[in-house]
Length: 211
Image 1 (cartoon, rainbow, N blue to C red):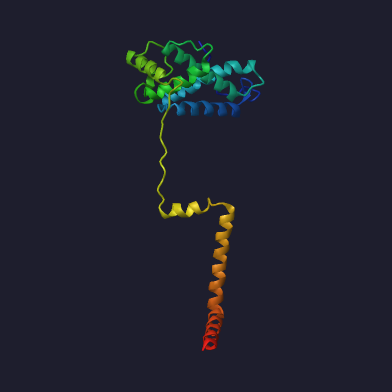
Image 2: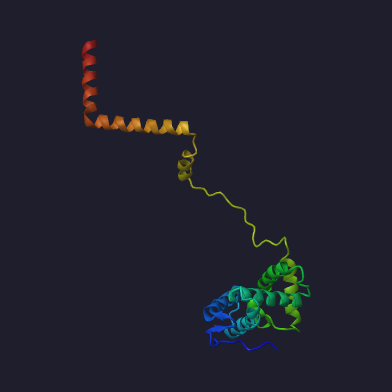
């Protein structure tokens, strides 16, 4: 039987050799992990977090160089992975990472949060329907599993696409285009600031010369 979780610091102000702040951070870490698995039952969530921290507190005095959060994260993953092994009848030895990853995905595929939340991390026996759903989801969540596969479609931007293609022209053509545009602006400015009168007078002189 595991010891009860210590919630009050000793005379040194620590719990199992760690500060209260460290254990608070560990609590948040474990709670967020279970939130990610969509555990929304508050009493169940509290029990699961305390269960992990109890095991972490047992280890903490023996591993003074490691933080409470690090130890709690390891114990959390170990508890969940061992439970996956029991439900799926798969040994976690040598395949901890694979079992942990595919097991968590199987939980979501089997809709554990919606249908079987009360079975999570409970010792067996479990309802046969739950076991079969978990095992089927586990095999579906194999290495070839893909969450989605979508073929991107090109957007029709109409006239905007024509303008955006202008930027892909070679640098020489781009420079010529901007040069022509600049000359056009200069010509417009000249004509609207007296240049038109100069052209008109020169044209009239030319006509008189032909006469």
